[in-house]
Amino acid sequence: MNANRNRYLILLAALALATPAAAQLQVEAREHLRALLAEAAANNPDIHAARRELDAARNRVSPAEALDDPMLEAGVVNLPAQSLSFSREDMTMKMIGLTQRLPYPGKRGLRREVAEREAAAAEHNVRETGNRVRRDVKAAYFDLALVDESQRLAQKNLLVLETLSSIAESRYAVGQTSQADVLKAQTQRARMQEELIKLGRERPMFEAELNRALGRAASPAAITPAGLRLQEAALDLVELRAAARTSRPQLLAQQSTIQRNLKALELARKDYYPDFDVRFSYGQRDSFEGMKREDMLTLTVAINLPVWRGSKREPRVAEAEAMRQQASSMYEARVNETDAMLRQQVAAAEQALRAAHLYETALLPQARLAADASLAAYRVGRVDFFTLQDSQMTVFSAEVGYAASLASRSKALAEIELLTGTELF
Image (cartoon, rainbow, N blue to C red; front, side, top):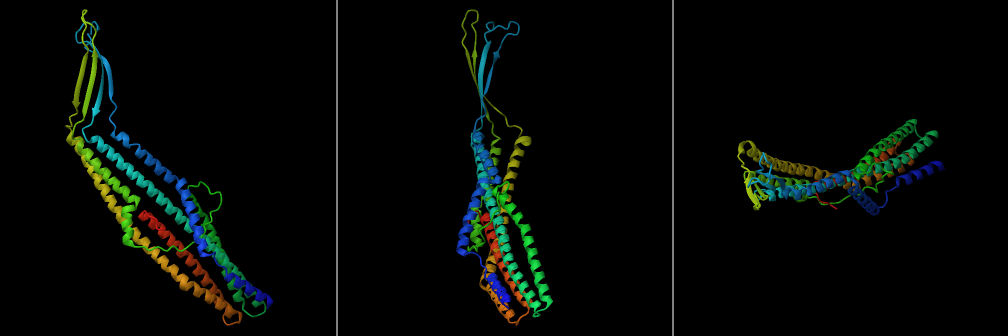
């Protein structure tokens, strides 16, 4: 009897196992996640690649406006073919000159504006990439936290099931219960061990995904999340949609692309106007029959004749117009996609919040009270072993369900932050 009493005490202690204080968990989780996000921002190769693309785009701005390199020419003008003498003919001279192409007024400014819009789009893409990496880090972190919490709960439940199995075996040994109770206890214990094996397989996958998002080639040590917490946040779909249009970098980058293509269209239309080639040359003449001759200066202006409209310039204008329309259509598509995904994620976040509150206020307290009542009733023989074991598995399912709702809520909020380009906390 004393052995059974001790087992009941062990069982009560196992049932009383609790998670760390909620406030402490919140502080630890927040600080741990903040450190991981900072590491990802510093080390993730996707962010590095986006930053290098931005550097390249910024370095294209100044060259886009710059003039073409001037042409230097040198030679001999009007040299007699037979005598090859520089003093025989009056117009023979040695010549050096410079030629500079000057685009039609407005073209250089438009080229710079096109490059500036491209750089602006690249800058928004850097922010979008950073936000995506933040979302990936958070999603993997919360998945990993859920696995760890599920393992902790499974270990606690396995301890309870082992104690129940010992009680059933002791009662069977003295003829107080049937062999079926012992077999049920052993079967349920084996199932819980199988659950731990499955969770052990899942953990490396989520840890590898987190390492990828952090930019780690290989993790030197296992990553242990601080825990899950309920994140309360008021979600207004109308406000979130408005925030997405003004703050999401992907949409801002698409707007910059639209502006870029508008400037490219203006530039294509400017191509109907000619450019100018300004040429200045200096000719040096030798003395002729003892008479000193003056040197010669030459200044000319040439323009190209944009006569090939149908085969060259009109197709370029049509191409620029098509690109402008494509950018506008893509922006509308991204806006519609963002609105649809926001609706989905807000619904998922609200459902997870309601589920978490239901677990907190009803399901978990009721399941724990039912388990305590079943244990007390089993001790005096008022309920069978199956009822006792089923009540404990109900507690385990409720605890895992509560943890899953916390993880789902956190992941949905991370998606909303990506879609709106803002931080909710």
